[in-house]
Length: 603
Picture 1 (cartoon, helix red, strand yellow):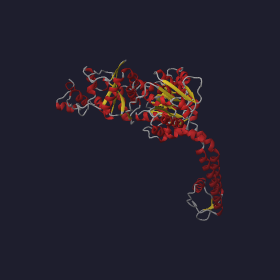
Picture 2: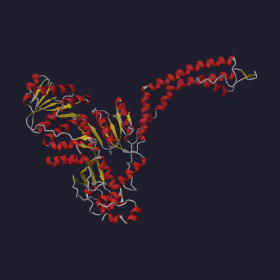
Picture 3: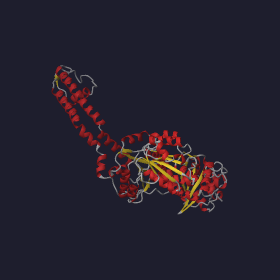
């Protein structure tokens, strides 16, 4: 975002004379990290010292020798070249420029020496250039160069940014989502190919990325953990131990920062919660919770899933999972055991199939789920639901095909482990699909996009199915079946004189704010989801709701509606028009000439 535009939005958000607060950070990047970031020049000098010494010695010997060899001037008198002339001749000769014999024609002795100089300089330059190319291909040098470049880019950041540790499938999805929201972020990942993939993304910002181990606090410090503009840390790697180390480092070094960590292990989750109050996202738990919600309240689940999907998400179908009967679950590991417990909590019967399961355990069939005999023992014909939940995508796809061959009427849920297999699962068309990265990314987006969205989603399940169904219909009627954008609006009397007078009249209505600035009789394609007033929250407030200074609104709608609301709050004449219906000139001169005044326009 450009400098003047950034200053303009700061004025809108914080009011005149105010600036966003900057947190005073006491923790600094360790000295070892700073030394590593500035080690490039020392590495160059260490690797290139002998090639440079060789070239310098060749130039020096060639220049001195040409100075001592006698020559002749234009009159044929003996003459010797000065140090400057000798260095000049050696320079253009060694660099293959070749201006000729200057300042006078050479003698045979001089020509013989220049010939030796040519061959010596060729050898010297070949040695130097070869060493330089070897250095450029050296892994340590490239790493040091990338570290120095990364450190400079992070140090220059002035806008709030997120520190993402882990740029796998989850990190990439979060990166695209936050980039569409205009949020900056910094990436840290141990795999160099993931950092190289970062450069290929068409992000609107220049995203700093470093291939380094996030378990090292020094690397977190270089990535901006101690930066004043860092607003949150996301531990999104596929290694639970790494995510635990990141959570621990943030809690000890920057306890003021919120941290969101991903894990599939209950033990790791318990250890994470020992360090402060991190937000821990377990995709296995979330999928089970979502499936239970889909069983109890399909419309509520549809609304929550839609809002969690981010900008541009299409309205998902309202699924109808069977609420009675028996389910068959293949894969009885951590995911399978958690999902089985959730299904049993809803009053359903679950039969688990797993080759490594305990044969003495109730409702467990030991064997391969794709084996027809095992399917027969699990009585798949009498089941209503089937879950392919192993950690192997090929196995899950074959299990789905085998189950549908036995019972085509099954409600099928599947687990996708690798992003490369997305097209295969899409072609298989399961009724419910668990993609770990999507579950985590949706949760993180709901928490970090705006606090109002997370609060709204927490309140939705308590409103009932009818309310959720009406809410979906209302959003579709105003905004269509594609969720364009969600944005917060803070009403501040200090933002402009017109807004202050409007809020101070006691008759400021929400419906007036949602009128079109071009035609006040036409409502904007937007829906207010939540009104926050102090510690009070009001879901879907009506058009007659009175607005007050300090109110915060969460609005869903089209980007055009967002620009219209911003225009109404920023331009005095537009606000006068949508409130009173009068077209009032915005300029002071035109108001005087037309006989209008601000006070009369808002009475």
